[in-house]
Image 1 (tube, rainbow, N blue to C red):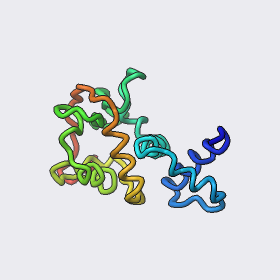
Image 2 (tube, helix red, strand yellow):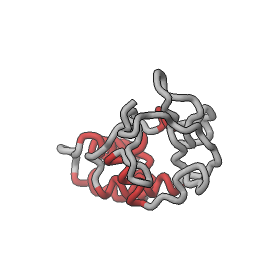
Image 3 (cartoon, rainbow, N blue to C red):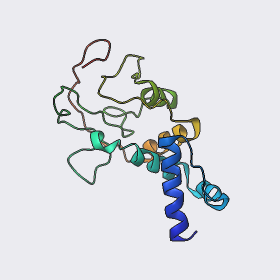
Image 4 (cartoon, rainbow, N blue to C red):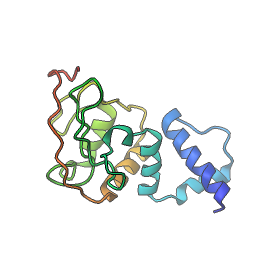
Length: 155
């Protein structure tokens, strides 16, 4: 795949995730998106939805391992999204991860704080790709402080 075609594929996959479609792309480019592995596609979707803007640590080399600093103006501490079983999402099922992304519910079905955006538009293919990407990350032991929000998830 040429560099230009790959760039178009990345843009297309990002647009499909964020906007729900990629109209006007050539058949070759849509077909080329299937050359991305699920984890690669998940990395594109995660990047397009800017998950790292909150969940990134202060260390650039550590990806999506949570943040010990609260989001500005809140007592919300972004969670560790690596597959670490103790401090991350390593014990979560795929369905629990997708429910958190789409509906804003944690692994026990409780509301996440309102500062966590909901992504109900994430389809099954992109959802599976996000899970594949998160599971492909190296597990990072990084315990973040407990977020404080109302029982209904409001800030």
